[in-house]
Length: 149
Image 1: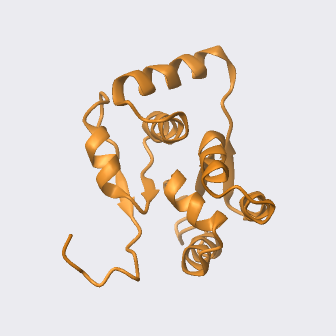
Image 2: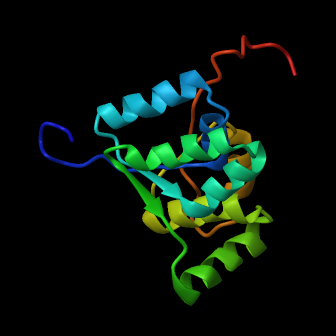
């Protein structure tokens, strides 16, 4: 929390960040723990956890993902009820995103929160497909030395 008592706007963790956690990426894990220690709220969409788990598929990966629930300032965003399921279907139809990334987009769009990602290009591509643009915050890849694509 800031000195004035205002709570910062939460970051919505996307599947790329969650997959990095599931792989045990120590730099990303330290970054997320640092955000938690600084009091930065985070939202973790349930379907994004599913996507990260599918990406890595190991018991250790699932345990690392479950460990995110232990963070003091992280909240899970489940998919609740027919209304949210319909809203998710609308995001999938409009963007072509897979269900886990569409859940991230739907949560970020509904809550007007930035998406924390390792893949900003993907989000910029789909941001215009929604009524309001998505807010995107990319975590810089420390291994990327600016090599040409």
